[in-house]
Length: 123
Image 1 (cartoon, rainbow, N blue to C red):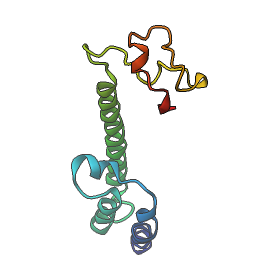
Image 2: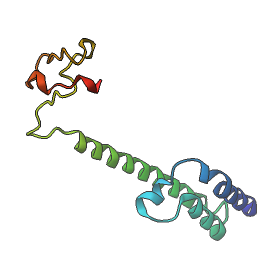
Image 3: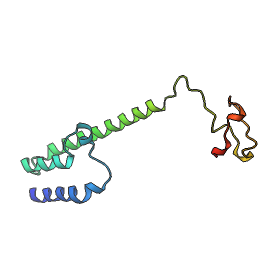
Image 4: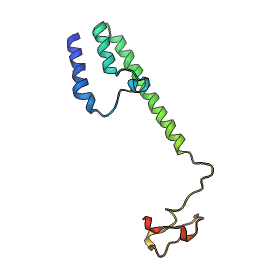
């Protein structure tokens, strides 16, 4: 059973993992080995049945690492989305009505830029 489990892990590492498009969350967060490599070592040392509890703990840790990485990404995007205090709404793109053409550039409501600042050629 141990040999078959290790054979499946090696197959996964060589044939599936390189093409799945993402990395093990535990390895990404903690800069260690991937879960498949860790499980391979656990099975080599303890066997399939005796190592089951350790494998289950590793996958639980990996799930926690995945959640932590996504929380970190969400916090980063929230920080980047906050408007700066001195930024006013810039109307350089929204000021013009592109249906009127470049010769009739009319600022939209709420635009504090003069009509000459509007560039309808952006549309």
